[in-house]
Structures are given as C-alpha cells and as structure tokens.
Length: 247
Image 1: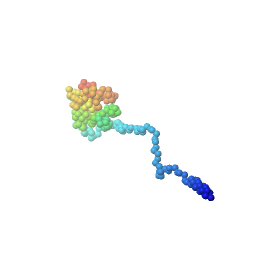
Image 2: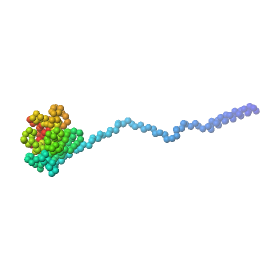
Image 3: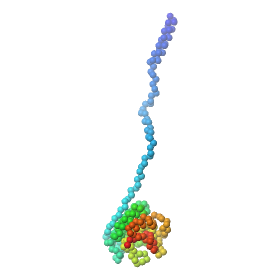
Image 4: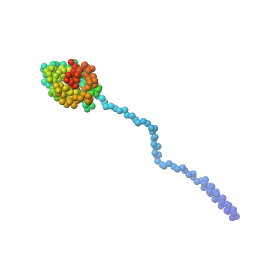
C-alpha cells in the first residue's frame, strides 16, 4: 500500500512537469523600440562638384552718334573755340559722340567736334579703340577749358576741333579745320622747341616704357587711325605723339 502511494506521487510530479513545459509561452525575440525609426542615412554616389558657369559683367556695346551743332552749342563755342575769321564755319562741323573705356575700366560717353567730311572716319576709329579697350582719360570739347589748348592737354583731355594756330606759328592747325585729334596728351606729349607739352608728359618721354594710354608704333591706336588715312604726329620733325590728322 505504501509503495503504491509512492509510485502514484512520482507519476503526478512527472505529469505536472510535462504539463508546465507545454503550457509556458515561448520566449519572444527582442522587440524594436517603439516610435518612428530614424531613416537610414542616404549615401550618395561620389560625384563631381557642380560647375557654375562664370558670368561676365555685361559689356556695354559701343555707341556713336553724329549730329549738326545745335544753336546753343555754336553760341557756347563762339569767342571760345570758334570766332569769325576761322577757316571753317560751324555749319561744316559735326558733334560726334562715342563710347570709350576710361582708365577706371568703365565705359564713358565722349564728345568730339570734327569736320563733317571726317565724322564717319572718327566714329570707326574710336569703335576700334573701344574694341581694343584702349583707355582714354577724358573726351570733351575744348570749350570746357575756355578754348585753352594748354589747359585741355594738362587735363589729359582727348579733343579735336579748336580754331588755333600751330604752336609757335601763324599757320592754322589741322584742329582749326576739325581734321585732327589729340589723344591722351599727358601719356603722349608734344615735343616742340625744347619744351614738353603738357609738362606732365615728361614722365612719358621714354617711349620704350609702355604704359596704359600710350600710343606706340604698330599698336591698336596707330593701326586704327592708319586704316582711315590719318597720319601720326610722332613722324613729325618735332614728335607730337598725341596728334593724328587727315588733310
């Protein structure tokens, strides 16, 4: 009897162990944390840097105009750069406006008073100079300097018509006919009678030391004027590096 009780107790214990194992929940895998998972970083393939094309500053196109002298302009010239007895009347002169490059690297609008026969030629010359980016200091009619050629040269002003004589003579200058122009007088002085005109031009007597604004043999300036039939004053007995004329 006691032995049977013992056997039954062992059988119950075994059955309990088996049932417990079968009913226990299976262990769950580790769960991901709750919340929106962070997106995986996007890995871009190696690529060349984006090339942004360089944008050049807008270049102002060359502009020019040819006009008869207004009554107001003639009045301002009379007794200053023109007077009765001059070799050409105002009716034969024209106001030429052109775009030029300044020493500041910017485009400017300049004015020249020239003979009507050469107005087109002057426009073509200064268009070539503009395309070559040749710098010009200033370009205003000589009335701005009260008709004084000396004052105009000292200001490094490029000018054309002025009813005056050739320096030191009683012969009309080509300027008195509107058939000549002086370009950057300081950088291109006139050597006459042992003088340098303007005096500041002494700094440019060494023509081998090429600097901006100087006119030199075979450069864009001399080629542009030669193409229109002008002669260069550097070839005169007394060199006039600033001067170009066409008879």
